[in-house]
Image 1 (cartoon, rainbow, N blue to C red):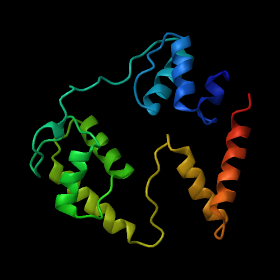
Image 2: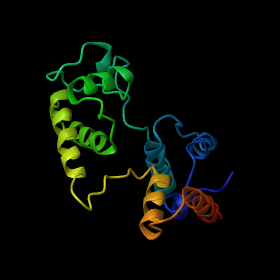
Image 3: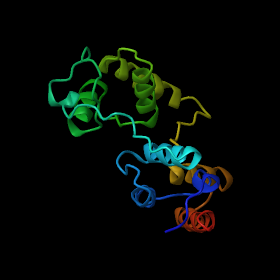
Image 4: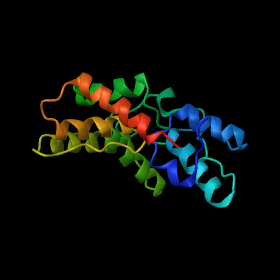
Amino acid sequence: MKKITLDNLHSHYWLKVELQNFCRQKSITSQGAKTELVKCIEAFLKTGDKIQPKQQRSSVRDSDALITLTTRVINYKNDLITRNFFKSIIGKRFHFTAHVNAYREAKLAAGEKLTYGDLVKEWLAEEARRKTPNYQSMIPRSCEYNQFSRNFYAKNIDGKHSDMVKAWHKEKARRNKN
């Protein structure tokens, strides 16, 4: 396994399994999303502290009951039931977006009360922004491939997908050298 250091934690592309293996070697929790693992590893490398990822919510999901526009967002899940709810309101054009996920997480972290109606409104507002020329949707930090792809096509307007994939593998190999 490649050595993870504070210097290369954010500059290299790490697979989730690599982060989990590092966590297991150091007896750090290996559960959670990739972004949570990075936070735990960063804390460990800076201080030696073994922090836990943010508290897991109840196993009862909002989608285990009927979701309506007034249903409070408590234990949200991007699952088929939630997708079908949004499609019933927005239509077939609905798809989960990183922006709405970030919006939801920020509102809940700030302690704000949020309903599924609020998420519908934010999705529709984002849809309107997407029609603006030059609008670029957000790409989460954990989605390095997506960001690389966007950057590649910005520099190579007529680039082929196969060329982008080759460039990604070359960049990934270069970034992972210690």
